[in-house]
Image (cartoon, rainbow, N blue to C red; front, side, top):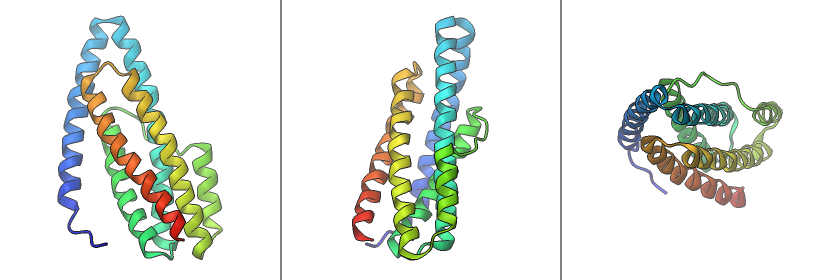
Length: 178
């Protein structure tokens, strides 16, 4: 499988998402000032964004580790793309006002486990961790999309869900190849 220059696509997507979220976050803040119900929705958005950031941080950190330890070329490519996308999503969430998050307890445990593994055992554990984390991300992003009253947040969440689903399926496929 040959992948041509995806950096332009990723840059365009990142800039588009960032712009939509910044505009949407600004609208949500303005709505929150004017409407107590909107303010409650903004609080729900913020909590869900923090959960997404925690899961994303775990995915980023394990992907960065994988870039140094992975033995399978396809798994390494997955880790490379995942690290790049999580870095962009982290910047987007930061621009939305979400504080930098430490990984979830599960994410920390996975990172610790991965540090002690090598070879095929590392590759398999990394990919299983990615599949599990992406399932949790899907749940959190779906919840954000359903809870938010901001159409920009909903649209970006919808776009993110497509990517999360793709990563989950690719991860499951790679698990069968390792």
